[in-house]
Figure (cartoon, rainbow, N blue to C red):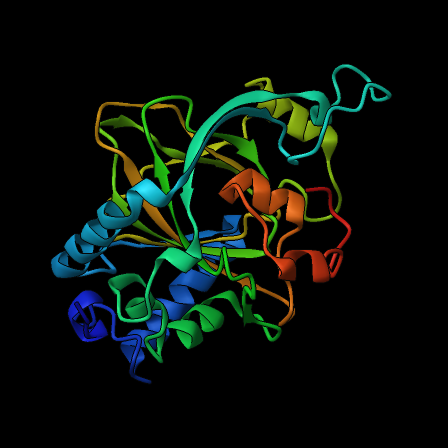
Amino acid sequence: MSYDAHELINLKCYSIDSDGVERQALVQQARADLAQDGCAVIKGFLSEKGIQALKAEADSVSLNGHRTFSQTNPYFTNDDPSLPVDDPRRAFFKRSNNFIAADNFHESGALRTIHNFPSFDPFIQDCLQEEKFYRYADPLADVIINMADAGNGFPWHFDTNNFTVTLAIQNAETGGEFEYAPNIRVSGENFSEVRKVLNDESDKVVQLELEPGDLQLFRGRYSLHRVAPLSGVTPRYVAIFSYVEQPDMVATPERCKQLYGRALPIHYERAGLRADNYID
């Protein structure tokens, strides 16, 4: 089935395909929210048809997701016994999650129809105010769906890419809230504050409950965040669009294997091509 983005995106409320005052106001609000805490949410960005189309597409490929049950630290690195026992790099938490990789979504499907809408990327770029702005070149991760079942959700972590854009598709029956500590490492790793978040001692954590159809812009490279534990038989679906600062950037082979259960030749060819030196 093929789709028209005008049917999937709520353009009556959010005219991102125009140059009018309504789009300008929307961009300005998103910029203000991002400046405040690195997170902006546009409520009801999708139409009801868009929500249902994405849900149906997610259901159709849900068996292709990579399900893992493991323990991870916020940086997706191995334990280092040479570090102090209370170092956050030595704090490991149970993770139960499922990622449906980008190569499961066809060009004519609902997800890529939204992603390829000519006005979508320029709108996101305007909100983020980034001159160096490219789609993630990773063939497994440029646009994916995170499917979270009952369990521990996705524990505290930092993203590999600088900017993440998500669309909420379906919530779990209970739990699954998005929680984040804004801009916790904008000027360094800030291990002391990370430790406070992990120990439930921080006053910086914000809890956000996204509804199906909501568009979220998030600077996940700099803000520690997680999906809270959830329960019930209904999976939580969230589409994730990734943008970076250089055109050839992909994830490391190790990260791909963790998230998708496989790595491609391109991940080995481009390993190490990064714009910063933060730990992953």
